[in-house]
Amino acid sequence: MTAQDRWAEQLAAWAIPDEILAQAPESPWIHPVRMFTVTGDEPDSPSRRRALDALPERGSVLDVGSGGGRASLALAPPAAHLVAVDRSMEMLAAYAEVAEARGVEHEEHAGRWPDVEADVPVADVVVCHHVVYDVAALTDFAVALDRHAARRVVLELPSQHPLAGLAPFWKRFWDLDRPEGPTSDDCVDVLREAGIDAHVDVWDDPWSARSTLTPEEHARFTRIRLCLPEDREPDVAAALASAPPPGPRRTATVWWDA
Image (cartoon, rainbow, N blue to C red; front, side, top):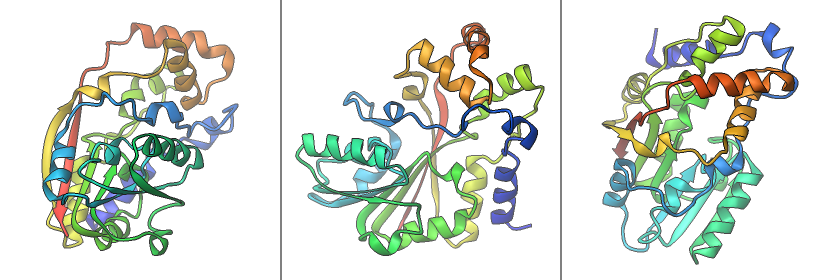
């Protein structure tokens, strides 16, 4: 089995069983915009430093799966032109609002990468944070990132699947065991199989232990992700309150020169 096939197979195992999904009162695949917006007090990180190392003064940055812009707005300055790609118009609107307020030249492209790559310019540095676990065809995705980088590509991803922290709650409420893979090591295997000379920095992200959500919002979004009805929200809140507080998340910065 190729590294790409193994990656796709492990991601497919994260699918929610049909009998559970059929009971969901609303889609569990939610991404609250406020969780992805820039607040201005985000800490420095190895991912930012790897991007800065390759970014010229008044250079350009392409942010794929930009969300509210945490990855790329942290690079301006020295970046003078930012390009954001995201599937969510809400995310892109939040991105544009912050970029405009900071006086940074920017453009936004709505759509799924790499479907929209023909409409997107090449940039000095391409950043892509916390996206690849949503990408089954990782080889094509990464090669398209490489095509759009004049100098460097920087990926950031948790060492484990971002939903791994919900595993105890799936077991508690549905008696459902969740997969253990894929991991950031599997991601690197796919890249190297594709001929990409990927380098890895592994670190603990203190920002991941913080939350922009109130306890009530956290319970609501967790309940939705678990496909539970609204009347189970107090049970979810109690389970969250009794769980150990999350520590810094083990994170991988994966980067390569174009």
